[in-house]
Length: 116
Length: 187
Image 1 (cartoon, helix red, strand yellow):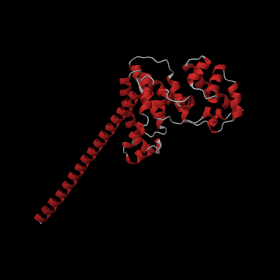
Image 2 (cartoon, one colour; image 1 turned 135 degrees about the horizontal axis):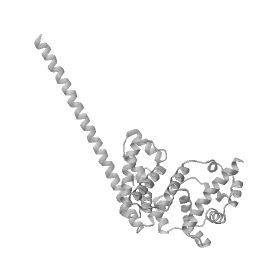
Image 3 (cartoon, chains in turn orange, red; image 1 turned 90 degrees about the horizontal axis):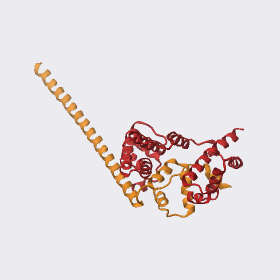
Image 4 (cartoon, chains in turn orange, cyan; image 1 turned 135 degrees about the vertical axis):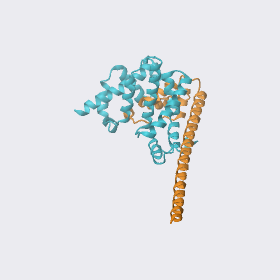
């Protein structure tokens, strides 16, 4: 009867390795049932497995996933560089402004002393 | 490799780290956990490898910009919703109609986020009584799947139902069980 509790088990993640093994049918019936029970809890995993099954091979899935991850990393590092550049540009304006104020102060000081 | 290093950090913790230092690398780690799943979802709806790859990239862009602006409590469900909505919009643009009930997808996702009373405390007697009230197909599939630990394929061979019918009998059976148990608990 304890197995009935599995019906309302809370969602647990399926790892990428499990996904690939399931698609390859490279697992025992028990393992298959365990993964399918996780799929029955999560629509995300359920839909994903249906979709991944349409791709040519396990190697193809891994290759596409790696490429997408690389592109994501590039995207993030590009935005990181952009932010850094923007910060430096903001800082440059700040330095120019501070120098201008200092220069005006010095000029003002000499002008006041000169006219006295 | 990076994923292994940060395996012990939950999605929520990664989001908190991002909120603290605004470093998008944290979001990158989070999103990479779901790349394969997102690819699968996009493939399911778009049925085209190139379109699915483009879709995942667009979903990443959307996620990166939205996670900067809004607080997300359930990143996994949220990403799934974004993926479904993106694919459905894309299909709508292509004027392709789906046979699935889109509202059900979202309703089910939200349902997963809420821990119901049933999940907290399962009364086995009530559950047994509720199972008896299911229709024959659902009762058989649920019993074979949860009690006898049979796979979808095995259940399909035993019952003569298609894989899709097996899956939906289990899903609908579960939903009906919840309703029945909630009714019984309220008495």
